[in-house]
Length: 197
Length: 197
DNA sequence: TGGCAATAGATACCTAGGCATATATCTTGA
DNA sequence: TCAAGATATATGCCTAGGTATCTATTGCCA
Image (cartoon, rainbow over all chains, first blue to last red):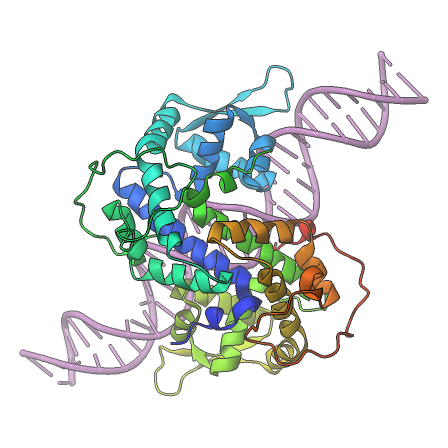
């Protein structure tokens, strides 16, 4: 069956981007969950922001993530529910609530930054390294890579299918991966089953 | 304030794609709404699919849009609520419900396909024509174009800022725009105000 | 110093869409 | 022919995040 969203080209670029984004998020979340990181992928940027920018107010977090304040308030509530961050009153201004990592959140973040995120970054970067040309063409290729499991394999293997001949692009988290032996050998999972719900 | 999602690079590609998609959808929806197309941009692919593939079952529509069946069932319910499509029992199989355009939906679709969508497609294509290089770089540029109003201007003007020197790429809906005089001269709208709620 | 605008955040309500599962209907094999 | 599985859709409940608006607090100015 024809993919109407793809056929419509630039007209539905917004829908297309969102759809591809959901799939990519789903695949990475699936991989992280198999390594007992149960935080939904959509919450990782917030966690990372609090980690790298120190305790932040809700408003600052919204700016850092380029999301609206109400949306961030809810994301914070979810992270609080998961025990990863805590909010505390700001000494100077009683309107302000500062979001900081809990010890649990800090541990999780440390593990992610040290072990897992570099591998996710490298795997996604490796898949993206095979893309070129116009945006729509790259999205089509990326969508195919997620669909046929190339991204999942790249995550599982620590190396992408085609990285054997291509050199990896530099990403923001490449700081020398461990030698690729942390939790290998899981059963291959169908990316189709990934989800956020 | 630093854009953490952008900084994290490939790690947060999924979130990034979704965020850019939301913005692009918002900008196009804003423009369409100003031309009395009140259908949320997220529902246009479904409408177009029913229009071009004839009456479809819910399952077929889900395949065409690459979305899940429950999601499509709800989108169809919204389109029914808007009076744009109607569902009817299929003669042969009582489990199946076929989704077809209503006269209202058909009129709307005709106007969109003839007048409005080609302009949206051309405007988005024109913005995308200025992009090149790796996916993340293109996303950064696209996000900037939406943010600073370049996409909105491209939509309003019928021509993008830089299309004066660049030639337009071919899109799937370019079939000779009318000469650009349908509803010009609206007050410029801030893209920031665009939304789907 | 008191009132009022500005600001920070929370909340109500919405769309959008995922997963799990219920329901209704068909189809097939014993 | 009928019970059991397959199939089509609907529904419950969830995340994610948007707008509009409410509340609480701050800061400023007359």
